[in-house]
Image (tube, rainbow over all chains, first blue to last red; front, side):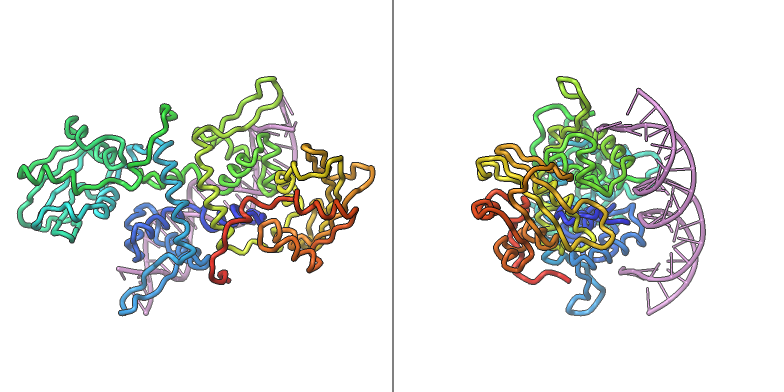
Length: 234
Length: 234
DNA sequence: CAGTATCCGATGCGATACTG
DNA sequence: CAGTATCGCATCGGATACTG
């Protein structure tokens, strides 16, 4: 017995959608990931077994299509038209989470996850004219944290690359940040300027690069969701 | 390990929302249920243990509030302002289910569930002027079906009552319906007129009552969701 | 890289019985 | 009516190892 035993459209939609990880897999697909390991990178805690299982279930439900690209090469996962229509649901969940939850459990402060998302939200038209290497170094990570804390973001408009290993060469802009401060800025809970004033974020480099940085570093797509007027729940 | 380990608003919202039965519990609360057994009635397959557990979790998440009514009596569950903001998510899931799924798995054709929902969707301003008893009798129920198949809907504008036992007295309008046909009409997959022509629904009673019936029997809130242009998935 | 196969432990969940 | 307590199984899902 595992369905809900109802023909209500909400119930049948839940049988496709409301399983552990499934909404987040869709979120990754909406964000533009197509390859298996690319999706997995956005979901560090899922096991490959389970990710494969969920993708298969989504395929069977007609939400996802897995096919090799026309020019050959490895298979890519893409949303079908039906899958694309989950977008408002994902947006609704994100807006709700933004308004009604405390998102800064120290356990969840993952710099690698943050940086992969940052990489996808760069205003390429605001980047410095020439190739620039920005080195990010995060502090304040949770105890036992085993993932990357240093990143090199290489920008050469309109290209953006994220490296977890030193690409060599000079660093043009150094970004030192407390992970929680940076996450708060990313999610719109604090302004960039305030974080700099608090010392949560510190920039070092040529003046014009420091000035330009907050213009090309965009924020989470949910950062603009208005907060409820009252205090947050405990 | 049971969270997603991410501070993404979608991820934290999922930790509240995306568990088995939870969206359907919210659906019941949106539909106006407040008492424990009233919620349970809309979710025949959930166990009491699990329903209590889920309601507790929603309370802890600040989505639901459980309190005795001012005049005394038994506790009632109500959505908090945060809970009320799940409405667009539920609506989105329902719209998706309406557009992209086949909802008529014979196993799911539950007449009792259908009638409790019908009872909530009556155009009370279109009801006959005086007290009327409509007797519904369903056929075509799945093998082994053990729940009610005969119902008495007693309307006396603006009051509507649903009985599962014969209230006695005369029946003014007799409704004989194949459960699947009725469900299709309810969900907007077939017109009432077509179901009557096909023999899926048959009305017996005074001419004006037969005429009036399709005017006060409203449909599911999702019945009007437009269907996708292409054929449905298998 | 992109998965699958297998094993096994954790937990989710239903059934039953009990309480105020 | 509105739950809670306890038990036990079934499934979920992580770890590891293997494959094309």
